[in-house]
Length: 185
Image (cartoon, rainbow, N blue to C red; front, top):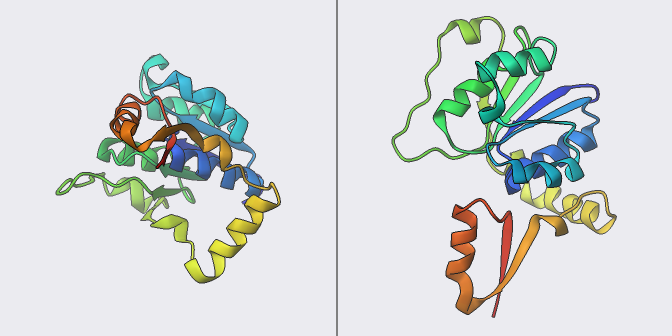
């Protein structure tokens, strides 16, 4: 929403699109959190205003983000699938109204935990699939946004590989060196 402070955990393809959405909605501050410093440049191109690498934070990441956002974020988005980061996303939310949205998919059988105090103070924890998009009505609009240049999809494609090099694409993904790879055949 316009003027909101947003924190995005994980600056891969999903996180970059969350940043674009926050920018399009008129967010004031868009903080990206990622362990990979190479992701900062592209995230700024998509609309990120502040970058935090947890390895560079002296002390507690949650306290750092709460201070950076002036009391906590209006919205946080966990785009990794790490249950510890899911908890941090909730704890980075502003008391009274902050909403933590879980997008990342955790491993089978993993559970998220928090203290009830985090929720009874007004924070909301929720999940989403496909950003809540409705295929029949929203996908055509998203295609129009792309065709009109309102959203950037092209820069998400960091590698184009022939089919015989598909395994290299998986290696690049696991090494954090690609966002999206297109396989041609």
